[in-house]
Length: 590
Image 1 (cartoon, rainbow, N blue to C red):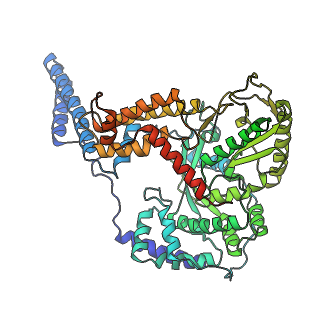
Image 2: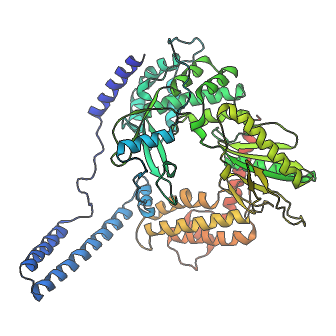
């Protein structure tokens, strides 16, 4: 099976490579260069040679004058090229301009102690990011499963609809756009290539090769340890198509077989971070109405995807009644994977790695939430909400002191439950909050919780899933933070369209809708900004409208919003809340 797939896929990719045009870089490294700059550079170099032979005051004056003219011409050419690029920008090149405006920090070279050459650095990073794991059981013989449902072209089309053409390809350097064109011309080609793999529950080794891009984590005090870096894994796009199909089928069976706990709000269609925050607030307020004190402990799973053990995951899938061909495919997918780390001077060799579930794969988040579903423990007046690897443990009792004891007991139970499946929690990232009502006259509780010998005191505000929580659920802190972030974003992108030049208005409108509005309105589906912050937010929204239209400050606001094609901010917030309510009403009961 592996040999057949390698021959078929190699023949297909070589055929595409020979006939599809390759993307070539610009023939000039400096697109703003011009013949006038070449002549000015020759003139400057000529005066430099003359001044070296005859360093007279006249020659030095000539070289200073020619250098000044040359430098000014370069600056003028860069400015003119940037202005022409912005004025002729298209929706496709809009985000390229945004990336240029925001800039990109230079990458750091991994300088690790004890590693003197790139091969040793790659080995150290591989040992850190991919520690040894127990391998899944070996597959002795391939069999075609009777319960298998043939792969259709409609499933492949749905997988393509969730794939971006700008997604970085893996080792084969074949982007999604090529496979989409192939599927549009010949819809039966990809199903006929991938269908035998699913029918036999097999994932070939050629699709398990990955590129690991080593990037540094920002704002670290030092970069002399592997923990100061992270690896972005790039998989073959043909493999990710098959993984999306399997993820869709496994997600459909997850509801039937109760693979995922109802309070897991991540990696599932129709669920989001707003659902997790809304469930948390609803349950806290429900306990408050019963005159209980409520406390929540926020935990983060250490390692996440890397700590998933394949034998335990496969045993869980079989025990829940998942289709045998899907279980067999998952075991084959997690076995015998290879990766090649990419950094400056890295060796171009693939090394075997032991991974839990590979990062960057469309099916990995789903497999992880299935794996940790058993951590949602049931207890009286207790609730565990999770979003992928972020857990929130809430308890309620007549006093905060009792809550502290209950939280410590819940953490011990979680730790015992997680130990057999090799899951642990990152203790330094733990946070605690004691909730209180707005009308409460009692002083804030300062009782800490003790976990593994460390004391964690309650926070006056904390960030979870992008939301800023305070003990009284006041949204002022959250929207003040959103207001600061969106002001910084506008200050950056305004350079793309100064008054009278730069991007055309319709592209500025697209930036406002797709970049500024999501930053400003994150959280508006569950919270309403208070009047004290709604005023500054509305003033900011008026500035955005004036930036789009180049209207005067004295322009009537109703006319300004119509001209900018943007509704007023209160109306936009109401629209977001209606959409969130409609999504909740139309979501499945389970």
